[in-house]
Length: 224
Image (cartoon, rainbow, N blue to C red; front, side, top):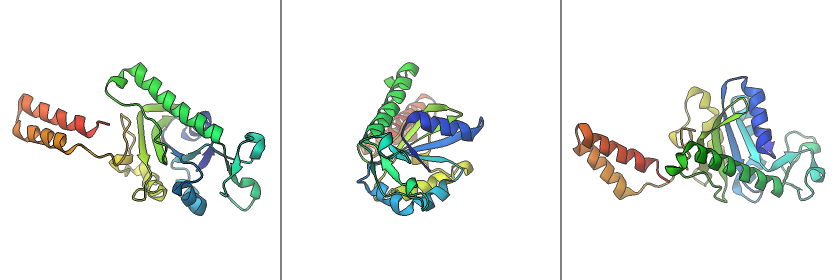
């Protein structure tokens, strides 16, 4: 688990740790006044041990050691990795905003270039705590795979840490697993449209009817 002032820092760390292998990279976006950062403050040593070498959890806009020399507007948040006061994390509003913009812009640009923007909604920060995950290989991010999980009382940061730690064994729940399109875990489905898709799939036992029904169902399951 690492403080992450910039997207370039995140991809550089991933490049040094992957050695040509696919790696799960997650980025926590949460301001210092949120329950997610309070949880991090109380459990930072445990969360750091759980992430270990299996995956990277980066905390957007935070840094250590630089103090105000790194960002004159930065301020300490009471998170320490170890007993040395120099390890205290600081929050930079400027770098948080720059990283948020970089994630949104890179994903938007990729979706536009690939033509996927006609069918998929690019990721946008909700303003509430989120964990954004994607696959990387060396310093290359697979923007198609981006998935965003909004953190709530039912899905706190601790839950994400536990589920993501098991990713090498293929145990990521579907709502948290980076795939081929951006999704928000826990997003409600439109019940009537889902019912129509199911009824079409069941009624169309073969051929075009079945294809139409399954297609409608998949579209509804993956729609924003």
